[in-house]
Image 1: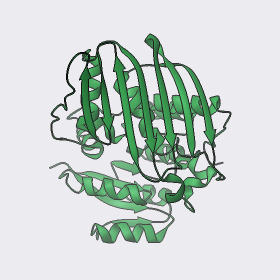
Image 2: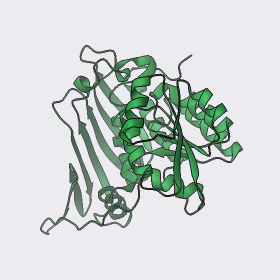
Image 3: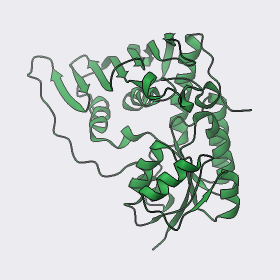
Length: 324
């Protein structure tokens, strides 16, 4: 059996989900982890019993010492760019947590680097693998609700309180606030489910006495005369995620995982959804093995970076990109 040897850069909370998923893949073998935070490294290693794994303070040491085929990057946002560059330059495929980069310029450079090196660059947008969002995307593409006319997308999270005292509220590491972080998933959904390009963007942001923006309210005009409202709220008491996709013949409502289809003149129904069959980690390994295409390629993730950058610019807010 072919084993894909993986190293991990960044061993904070999200890395635990990836390690859990990688543990279910026979072809995946985690061989090393790197993180300047020793406690985070030890917690990950002990939780998943990674006894044979080498650990490092610095990712460069890991890349130079341990032979690897691929790298999973779960580091703070502004470090993504350099971590991808270093990983590809050490002949590794890359699976990176969102956002791929903090600016369009960075995203384009990473895509070009991966292409020249003939290495896979996949971004971990989990909703591409979830049945509810697959249903929405297919229903829109198949004209289930007729011509799409409008979208509202909202995410509420107690982000302000959960991230207090962490790198996510340090601009030089986060590159931005709630929009750059959890909000990236919602921007991803808008673009991936509709396959539309944004033509006009207007936005307002509020920091709520923190170093980064917490709330953003954005109006977008997409091509084909589709209008959208994007509300990303970090100053909220809990997680709540909702979407409404309206078309000329009906609408699809998503409310915290529940899908409702309402067609004109018909009763609302809850469509039956299939079980999820893959995830970002499994699909990444399968792509390396040549069994499938990359499901969330850098070229697509670049569009998320582009729209995010435009939203910040429209609000007059200048996020930080790479760390100098």
